Image 1: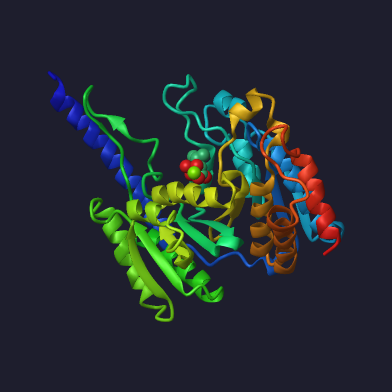
Image 2: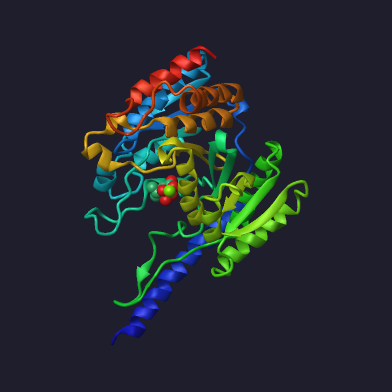
Length: 389
Ligand code: IPM
Ligand code: MG
């Protein structure tokens, strides 16, 4: 490498710019206020964006059910649904932005968002290298907690995964670079403020829901600084919750223990940095019937966004199977949305209806193919079940 010194200088400048941005983010976190109090809002604006692939199909079904549950409040003008178009891969490529400006403006005009999965370009697929819309939205709206419940009642599984959502490998996941032809780097980031705020939310949740145990999952034995700090900051929060048992796991053994039928029912709340949370939540959802059955809440101080834990499944669309997509992930996300804005009775009702339809009565099931019910047949089934509750 002849120009290695020059490359090194360029790399150092890029690294400096990354650090400056992250330091500014730390200052932002320090100056943030409290969580939005939805009971104080005259109108709660719910933004709905369909996304890509199977996104529009399952989001439309979830919106239908949500509107059914909130019909009286919509009539009274206490909740308002806002359709947000333009969060499609075609539009994002055309505008050259993970989230086009007009879409971002609309998102920010809402209090909570119901979002369908979006397609993420990746290296080698011929699409421009734009950041994932999910990741961009989580960062732009500072949705720092990704909460992913998983339950399999007959196995005694009731886990709630608290995935840190704005840091780790995701914070600057699109800002890695090739230093030389041979050397490439990416970065992982942990801040004291970032770890503290997700840990507080997880411990609070464990206490309020009598879950009694929080398991911290890292690879602090290898990724010593960032994972090490995450662990240390979580322990500081744990000290404030002496009523809750805290234990520590490495991410690899945790993936193994989740398939251990004797041990896995002991887990309650899992608290993890971003990337481990991403991986372990897919594994966890598989026990419940697959990622198609799992929804999540992305919570920040000012905004909150609710979505499926899975991607846009372009293959299903290509094979003409979008109509057979499972709306459960988005419907579970709606449960979390209702709870978050304070309509916990309605959230509990929808959860009950979903449990009846998915685990108990199972009059119809969605298989993702023509061997099962369509997305809208299942949505209809949930609404009929709700009427009888
Ligand atoms: C998720 C998804 C996203 C993530 C992808 C689509 C970028 O897998 O929400 O878990 O990695 O966070
Ligand atoms: Mg994922």
